[in-house]
Length: 397
Length: 167
Image 1 (cartoon, rainbow over the protein chains, first blue to last red):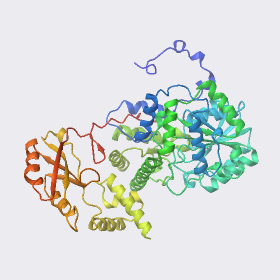
Image 2 (cartoon, rainbow over the protein chains, first blue to last red; image 1 turned 120 degrees about the vertical axis):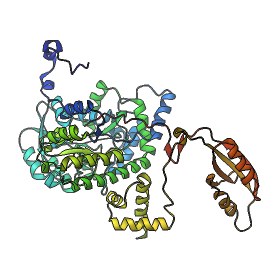
Image 3 (cartoon, rainbow over the protein chains, first blue to last red; image 1 turned 60 degrees about the vertical axis):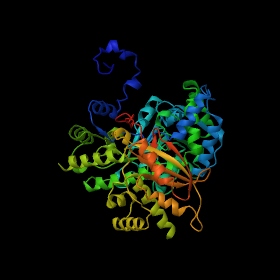
Image 4 (cartoon, each protein chain N blue to C red; image 1 turned 45 degrees about the vertical axis):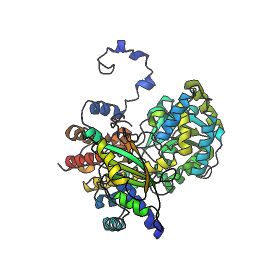
């Protein structure tokens, strides 16, 4: 029997030892749902936040070969020098901003990068502005780092774009240190457009804010080239850019990402990184290097497949009367379920019980996600089609 | 315009190769194009023999059917004007022949032949292939096990190792 499911007396559990800051963070809204889904059989899951492809073979092969040759030791804290160089060249080419290898820190996924950035800059109770719905770790991560997360609700009518007015209103009060956001966004799939990017840049410059931008999905952008906040005038000096390999190269389990930041901020992040994880796993870094050097073709092939699924999923959802914007990036559709009269949680739970299809309630990504569900199209087409048939049956019954 | 058409064709063919079971209407949705346009393109690509056919890949070994497959390296004397084409097409017409490729290197044609038994394949080589005038030599290699065919791995599909619901 697992530790969680057994009833334990609180003194036996050691609750009194847990720091209030941690105890007070509510458990992930996904967790309960995961437990429910994992107890059922024959479930088709469109609730998964990672690619359905395995890591391309040449990448796996490079890692295996490196292990065979004995590359099993630590790397320098900041990462393999060749990988840092390769990331710098890649970002220089893709973002149109000059980076050098020494400005790159190799992290244990973007998740570590977020934690490092927040811990490196936050003074106690400083505010971090988080447009939401957002990835689940942003607000808890801020709390763990001693800060105060402040959500900025985004609206579907604005295609989940950030408006300058909303940002200004949120930034006006209290001690705000940073804005933490993702583009493309998980769960909405929205890519921040020119107007939103400029709004963020203007407010950040005027109020001297740091911007932490999670670009883990930057390679999964479907309509036109990806525009990064870091490329806007005056932004490189105040941006922590976080990226990685998990989504674009189907490498979630390798746990490797990167951060670039202004030198002092990067040095502070490196200090925390070296005392907590030493370095990202060495085989994973070798794999990441291979991905950057030779992974473009496979990456594009996966992107084209996601693009086809994206259009099919949105088309089917619209057909069954669920409003859904065409996501510009990532691999999530984020339809409104308002027409069903159900809450996100009710919809999700009933869909799971009645039709054995798992999707994630929008409310798991912040209060403004209520009324939506996240449907991942990182699933094989046969499963996707069957799941959509079941969702249709559920919605129209 | 031609460039655009070529790009559209390539995208359509790639989608078709990945998802051959889909209706033109569905392919159109997936590619963000009009159904009529996709149907017209499919018709053109079929009549131009760009789309050659569609088939299901079966692991016959697993299905329990007795079957022997051999790769036969064939050396040929080329013919005036037509080179190897005429004889290659002649060989290709035999129903036992699954594929025929003209090769660079030490032999000319790679011919994959299928039969119910070793004897059947051997007698095909002896009675049909070797006697052809232009054929100067054949070397028969029996295939012992197939790991991958037409880009598909034949081993058991792995279960999806992902957790059911993740952020």
